Image (tube, rainbow, N blue to C red; front, top):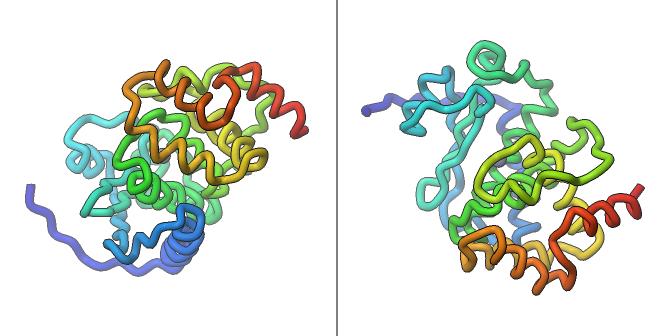
Length: 217
Ligand SMILES: [Zn+2]
């Protein structure tokens, strides 16, 4: 495909982008701008998303990144959200958080050496660090997220976000960064659970996360 690109100015997006870059450079301890400052590309339609992804995407997909040397965040225009996705038009705060969520993935990909698994960890951390948790319903129990290793499920974002929050609040950011950076060394859910135990000293189980959650309330 051949594309024609024109510059687009938008204060809200610019602000979220600057905030995200500053916060994540600090959290991940890397300087992404040094390598290649990311670009943000606003898309108008499902068709454009599918052309770039090179497959038919599901209706809930409203943003994605292409990391590596490209470092591009693709995001559906908020004014097209209702028509072109299964989402409602986002509030300014929700849309800013979505932009930050995607920028966070670019940082994660550097730290993880482009490993996307487990999905609950990458997306959970992006949900938590971008401030999206406040837009989700509170959870009472963890019951599903660990299954979301290489497949999305209804808990990838909500439980994953809360799980990452509890890991950071209780054990700091060093361990979770180590977990992400070593995630490329394992190939499946069971080996990841072993890596988790090695770093945190307790089993990756719903029981343990529910204990953390109850302590937190
Ligand atoms: Zn994501």
